[in-house]
Length: 187
Image (tube, rainbow, N blue to C red; front, side, top):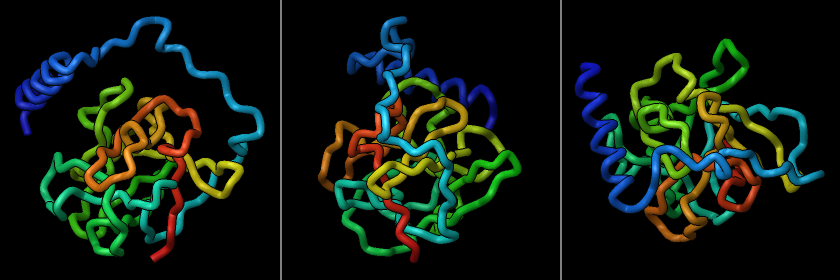
């Protein structure tokens, strides 16, 4: 894809977000990180199993929408089935992070266009060495995990904590709230 096509797609996305009242630039007060919750997140970084389901605390699994194998397909929540579109494979990166490759498409979990603000959806995209596909996994006190994107510093999150099928998986400021807590269930 040419750079002009990417710029056009980014402009379309930003226009769509603006149309629903989401600004690409957060006000200065919103850019500050929330205070860490003492005792909630362990300081150690966790290791992912080689092949797993990414199950949220809401009981649903991260799924490539409709099992589609193309680039830019959204990652959404769906009833867990252990199907290939819900199965993720760990790729260890040289910088100590991991990338998550979907078992059906062999494409990686990616933050759309590498944008760094809250509510940016995740999609699958050809795996590459860019930081928008690099994640660190941190243990939470209850045994769940936070997945933090290297590029944005934001956490993988279920939009508004919606418990139903098709809820978008996005990045959002790390709070360790339930929509950001994941179980990496080996397959």
